[in-house]
Image (cartoon, rainbow, N blue to C red; front, side):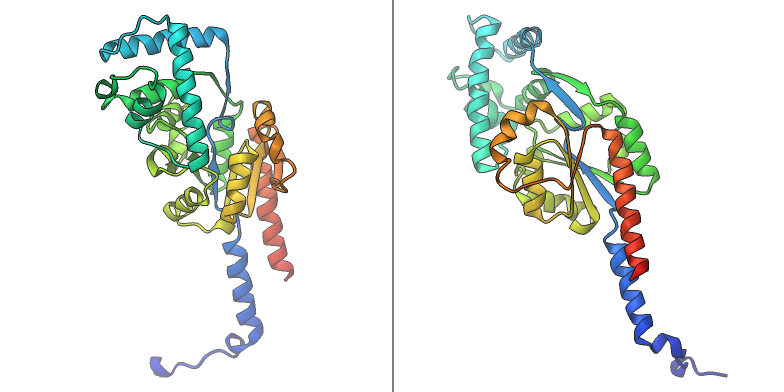
Length: 290
């Protein structure tokens, strides 16, 4: 009877070839895409401004502020003009600092800066005002094939998450619930909660930390060079998929000569599934060839 403490090692287990094979399998397995993260605005859905939508939101905002005891003689259109000026100031601040402020602060210090003395009335209500702004300021249209794409990715064993710049802390879960796809996503990393905005690599690192995957195992789908492509490149991610969004052409034009490029450009969400499958199959094949 062989003593378990002195059990002989089979000869083939001692070979360098076997050790190298194990290392290659581990490396190939580690670099397969295992998680796909999505941007929201411009990616999961598109946004479009219109005069009709402006009027609807302006009236909604006026009524919301009135319920808080914030009343103005300005017509809804004039109110929207003032809030729009504050929103542009906040956008400039957020893009320079890559910081997302708490909802109450956003409304007291930026959005309603033309209406002094209403700060205390906003306390505790900034989140709902941010949600209304993010949800109703523009006409939002869900991208075709969203549910089918997410379902196919999950069926392929991929884990799904969100990384989004957003003022509201509740908009993303609420809009995903509205689309009927909230159950597909394992984690939501929002600038409104984390406090840091894309393209700061810290928000991408946080998503990896929560999901417990490496940057070699992650893919990101977004629509902008300025936030999504630059962010993933700075964070060292290996696969960045940019989905076409004509509304970003003007903003991204100045970045075209910076050298930042996505790995893949697509026009439809449905293109994500075959792209991920192809890359994982190629990585698996390369591993076998080695």
